[in-house]
Structures are given as C-alpha cells and as structure tokens.
Length: 305
Image (cartoon, rainbow, N blue to C red; front, side):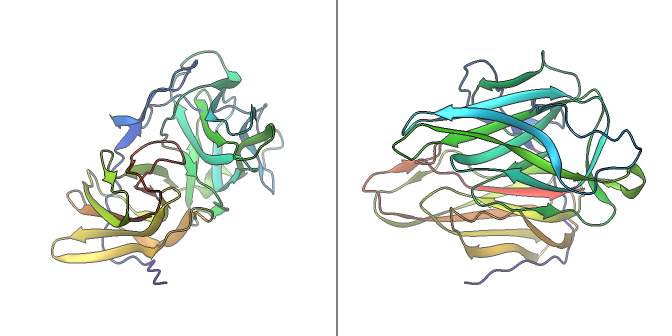
C-alpha cells in the first residue's frame, strides 16, 4: 500500500457544508451547500461540566443516543442538546459499538426546537465532527480546538445498521477531551467534498474523480476518506497553480476508516481538491450513490481552521 500523508502548499478548506434536515421520521438525503450553522445537531445527557474552572482531564461524553434495531434493520437516529456552557475541544472520538455505521455532529446557532435525546430521522451532514466504522481518536494540533458555544444546539446524526440475526440495542455518540479557553487560538471545523450522481458498473474496477474548488484560505490538518463496502482505493490531492500535493493515497478498508492527522497544509481560495474513489464491484449489479452501507459514497472530509 502507498499511503501519502503530507502537506506542502496552501489549503483553502472551503466550508461547502452539505446539509440535509434531520427530524421526525423524515428521510431527506444530504445535498446542497450551507454555512456553519446549517444543521440541528446531537444531544447527550447533561454533558461535561467545568464548575471547577478546569476542564476534565480525560474524555467525557459530548452527546449520545440509545437505539434498538431488529435483525437486518438499517436506519438513522438523531438527538439534540442545547449547551449551557462553551466547550473547547482538543481531542474527539466516536462512541461506536457494533451496529454504528457512521456518526455526524453539527451545530445550530439557535436551537431548532426542543432538545430530544433520541428520535428517528434521515441523513445529514454537520460542520463539527464525522466518523465511520473503525474511526479512532483524533487529537487536534496545539492551539487548535473545536468550539461549541453556550446556547448552541448540538445535533447528533447516527447511521445504524444491524447486520446480525438478532435484535441489537446500543448507545452511540461522541466523546471529547476538553481544553481551557486560553489554549485555543484557532477554531476548527469540518467540510465534505465529493460526487453524488455516480453509477458503478456491475463487474470489475471503476473510478470517479471529482474536483472541488476551495472558497477561502484555510489550514487543513486532518482527513477522513469515506466510502462504503466495495471501496478499494482512495486518493485526495490539492492542485495549486501547476503543483499537486497529495493529502491521501491508500487502499480503502471499510472496517478501518481513519480520521487521520496530517502535517498542516495551507490552501488558497481557488485551489482545487481532486477526490478519486476506486471501487471493485463484485455484487453482480450496478451500485449507485446512497446512504445505505449497500450503496456507495465518495467523500473527502477535511478538518481545518
């Protein structure tokens, strides 16, 4: 395998956040673009408290939701929670027991409605965090933090899939390690880049390359390549003038999806991110874009400031 993780030019991590509403029993598919406050996002119990003035030394729950699926059932569970204090996050990881396909957390500046610890919903993107199967802990660089302000509403979007023959119940969500406000100089966010309308032929290997233009100058420091079960290779590279910088070039494994730290790369407005996904389709039928594990995706997810 040839994994390339390095940075050398400037990366404008454009926050073209793709958002779809999540609520009630809706099943709206993700699409469109939005700014930093576009998706209502997850809620947990009462969340971490900092009454002593110092953040907890270890990981604490940010937001979680309980779920139960029948044998073979697949769906989405959301939760919302309004914060009573501002949180500065220096490290983040999913709480992802068996049955958790992917996790997304977003923020609403103003609560979209009453807090709800768990309800059926549809897929959505969010600008705070995302993880897949096998994603581990991500530690942000010194001086960089994810910030969730008091009064904002977290929105948790869980894609859950029970591939067993029995009823499956679990609790999924996100845990964080907090920083003191004085430790955070740069505020981080995530953004999603990739194609939607592709079709993967029934036999053999097939690749798609999707260009995305950065809208502003940003510094990228972590990448999360995301495909589904028949994904076989993933490449992400930034084109700046006549130069190309590879952010990622590696075989893809569905059961081991990293949100990986990379040396910081600064991008400029107008730079292009090329996302190339390769699939090996042995299903005997055409596979299209979709949210199910049995469909496919092709996303470069970047964390930047």
